[in-house]
Length: 209
Image (tube, rainbow, N blue to C red; front, side, top):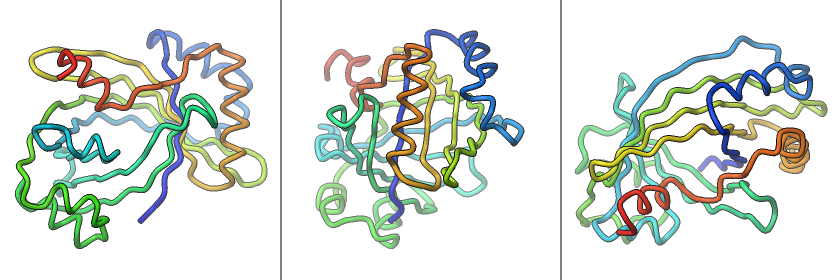
């Protein structure tokens, strides 16, 4: 059960990246080339969003050679820092939608998730097409952060929503180092934090369903 710590900020546009990527606050910590990726994720829940209410998020990446389902139990913690997300994750290969829950159970998914999802109807409420540019930041004290610039198009109920985000995932080191660095980023560039989960954004796009 890997844990995850992430901080996310909204970007006004793709062209804003040039300002960030040439600033010394970021440039000094970049050693590797940027990696580029494109993929689509489908997000599943019960028809009445029971998993979302229990703070679970389940998505499927079908672009991989082996279809993979991802489960996360996470909550935004704005009292600690706006945009900060803490949680746990589980990942499992699967063969079909009806096998996703059992596949996650074999990987140690919690009973609170299984009590909702096992035997329930699961539907794809929305999907997101991602275009990402990412690299590792090598901060002092061996802190490692995966920095990603994500352009995404959310598709839900025949509607579309677009967003640009700066995503900072802690790979190694203390959470406070991530927090301290991201506070500098936010102050330098005036970036607003992401305060809504993907499921919340989808529900808004669907008109509050």
